[in-house]
Length: 226
Image: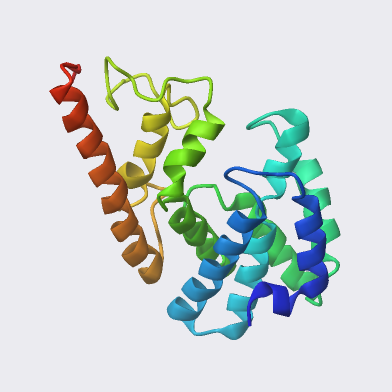
């Protein structure tokens, strides 16, 4: 069963909260992550309860992004996010302990990997990465970073001062996914077997795009710094 069938009241509430939201973190993104979170959990642990909670976490994981519409990108207060999440989760049929597991997973799904991470958090974090590595990332990055250049015509993706939170170009934002999430030494990498398998395939798709674009721009006469 998918999350809409498992948690119909919560699904309706979360869907209404996303009304008018388009781009990278709309209701369709939430349901895609929920689907992958369930699959990843079942593949990794074969536990229906964990899969159910992971799917619910995926459905609700956009809460901080919705709060950002009030406070700005990257500025969602955890207290406001927690309040919104709780209002959603209380409409489900999960126990108080399970609610806390889901709440913690959602609030921390973007954090570094930790030995203390719950199975729900691991499944959610990997599911979010899988969906964020689909090729619509290329369009979404342009929507999010509409005030940045599409491509850095000096450094391409090698600007030493660019960061994940300040990529300096839309292409650099795209570059971080294949560069870091499938790197075992990176603290934000995949941590489940299915996550790795799908992530590596999608990383190759993005890498092919980036390499092809560079070759085309060099044909156009652009010389990039290394």
